[in-house]
Image 1 (cartoon, rainbow, N blue to C red):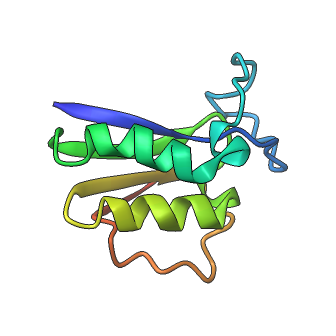
Image 2 (cartoon, rainbow, N blue to C red; image 1 turned 90 degrees about the vertical axis):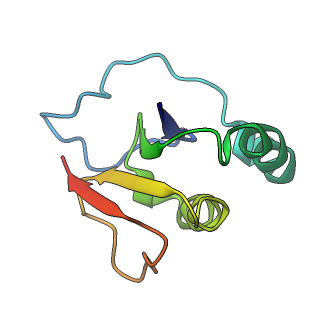
Length: 103
């Protein structure tokens, strides 16, 4: 079984015409409100419970470097795919990532 992990919302500056996330409902950014609680509650329940983890979202996942770095560290022993436009990957350490998908 797989799980999709959506990056906490922040406005995406790229405005890609082919983006599947445009026009979707916007939810509160729980990570921004309380990052430690977000990571503890959400990821204590899912780490080790799925075969594959796909990181995507209503915005470009690489826009929040701190969030993405923390998530990749939490999932370091899992099979992780990042779906990105690759506009913002410069400077990232992707050693915990198994698959990089360009969309």
